[in-house]
Image (tube, rainbow, N blue to C red; front, side):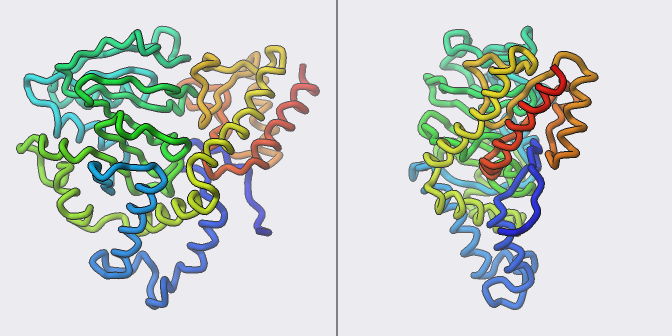
Length: 364
């Protein structure tokens, strides 16, 4: 490829594989000799149906999803799932139990409360500004919980679950928006996984839901049709017009991952990329200070600070001048953040490590 590309470390929407973008460019006005763009195809056409079903098949193969799970494509982002989950699965006698590890898990809990559902907090690390994932022994869960909800990776604070709990009633639900497809997953531990696509799966517009089929039978019958998971399952996510172009891009990203060795190879690459930047932090003698405790560090969102705000601003300005994009920390915590999702190339992380080393020498 000869295109001039930025070193894109945006937290989301985030980097997409250059090969996928080029493929979409070539097919944009004439997909599969239809004389139409994918965006113009009827979602009831055979050409679109093939895209839709191939995306599901590829995801099932890459993540080794068992046959007793459904794959759904829903709009509204992960944020809509915060409401859909309690609407579908929390009855008056059940409690939604949430593990709080950052802003997104707080928002998920908030939506359940707005709906008037019974909730509990299984564990929280808010008292240390969400710098770690709770130990499994810290979780206060019960077999009577309607479900236990976790956020597998925390984009703002840079923490990630390394081991998942075994929930006695097998009702573990996870928001995996920012690390799905980044490493192999023990799918059977979860009753449901959901993920907005705009970090590792494709562009914004589609949310992937992986849900155990027996849960579909537990849907609250008073839930509106478009907010019911069984509506999507019964209609192959085609009850209404789906985000067809986003699903087309999702399919292409999944093909890209498959052609590059699958999820295990992606995991290896992600560990290599993250190690470059974490080494720059760890070997800086405190010039760079990581936010997350070492055992909870995310491979997707690497958060760090410099010794004062003025130096942080200088770092970000000089980084921008060197072609690095998206290194600002979230507005709620400040500092710096490098999001090294699947599509971020090794070269970008290598260049960032070199920049961090040079910047330290100039300003220590």
